[in-house]
Length: 457
Ligand SMILES: *Cc1c(COP(=O)(O)O)cnc(C)c1O
Picture 1 (spheres, rainbow, N blue to C red):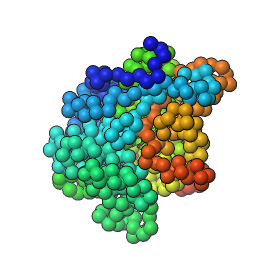
Picture 2: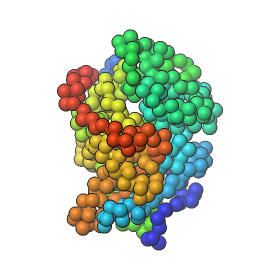
Picture 3: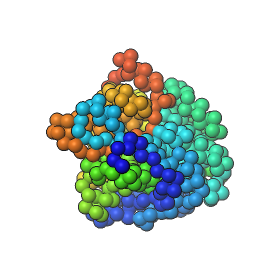
Picture 4: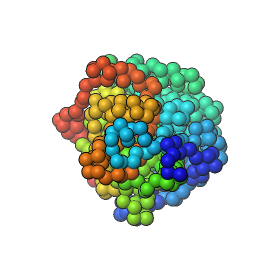
């Protein structure tokens, strides 16, 4: 059955376990350094994290168990959109005139339109189990906020979202979606927290950043007994929950009769969709001698892996979160206003950073006009309209497919389409009108931000 275009599995094929890369990294000689307490600089213990997260998630964060069972209640909700389809991009292959075989996993079929509900549902479940009544979080462009609002609604938990000011003002539809699913939204920086008030005192017109919004959400959770905090990317347990993606892809490629892929590609903001897609394949590289290239694609405007340093840094601007060893541009980095809002983060997941540092995965960065060039090529052939974030993976796939045209090789390439772009049409509009500009992050600004890293020996 090698002529399938859309490979759809049945509900019974939803993975029963999440895959934990921490179990296999030691076999590759890679160690993920522990997160440190922001004040003492000592490794954080469960008791340090307990004000923010339910214990089940803290245990997953540090677990080295290879497979962690997905609770039935979570799998039941996954059934609303999982298994998500894998497509063979036949029409795009033809348009690109490439001998490469291109497959893409489509996570835009979830109710929120991205991969984010895969972890939102799991996190809401564990909070509910722990008796938590309220959750706070931050959101950039609104994708994470809408995913958590949905999941919190499913489990009857109150949800409050700090939304980065510029998106709150310029991209109202995700905010409306968050409110429609029953959560409340405030623009960040806000007057509701010390972190927000401090920023506003210095910069009354601040357009906000993910780092600031995280500070506000964490501060509220840490100072209220009835409230916990939820993060949509970066942390081990978030990447863990996303591994349903890669596990399904492996099964779907088998059903399609495809060769083991030569190349796997995903975009990276904090690293969760890429990790979830790539880690089950990376395990095959580490344990079973497979030699698949895994490529993480980031914006030229937030080049944390490709131009940042691998160092301990805070996860947020106000320096409230644990310090994580990661590729970072500095926690007070202010990203340029590119349209891929979900990729505008200064740091990168610890597991991805460690894997990149060890050469287990590759990284590259790309300008936003090039990603929209690729998105248009893709959508005119395949129909699906990529989120600007996902278009980074589309662009790298196009480059690899065109390289195959040059070399005449018929490589198998698979990429993760992390979400659709139906709420990003203003970005497409700017592109089509010719108003989109490229941003190269200036070297001096990166160096300046990096002088504010915490001093860890
Ligand atoms: C949030 C988001 C991303 C970036 O986050 P990761 O944690 O790096 O996956 C990418 N694509 C879409 C569609 C998103 O919503």
